[in-house]
Length: 272
Image (tube, rainbow, N blue to C red):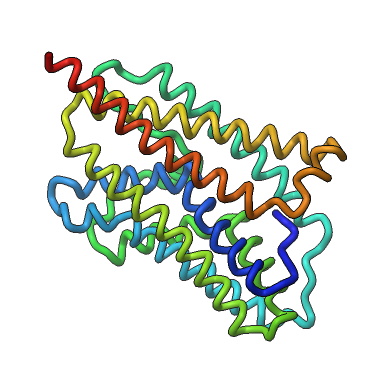
């Protein structure tokens, strides 16, 4: 977890970007993929909104935790070991997700799109069969019951206490949620478009994006390891969490564009 800025505007910007980056978590992408595919035929209108609804449900838990912690912030401090544990849990999950998605690309049926691999998503695969807006939001809420999400919400609340307390914690929780919604809503719409596109485009786009997500997961994990063990890397990255978060978000969005562009080109070539 990053050291949060001590000025309010900088803190709000960083929390918003952290929300975007959290929305790019592979388990978010996997869950939204499953929810969108399940509803695409029977309820296209809901399928288009699965990403946004998932994030809203996820964000409600974040805001509730932030407000709850803010109520006791004067008597609560995060233990030193919590941040270090969070770092290594994040690194472990990123390494696992990177390798799982590379394996998914390598072992995918040549005639089927690659399904992104996740960890929490695989554990709750059955409840991805949600066909009502409230159920989709409920799935998002369940995904928020994890160490990384809850610890981030607690960190926002404790930091917000120095600016005023509950109201500021709620604002940070809302900004984190807004960042997630922006990314996950786009992801849901992209998956819906991918499902409706030609099979050749779906095959290519799914493989390209799975490789992009895998490479980014592994890169971020290796950077986290280098940052932990190398004083030089740690010093260089100090106060750059906002820029690094933006970079990850931009790279994933470029991955979306690259996947669709290559799929379109290959599909057009195949038609000649």
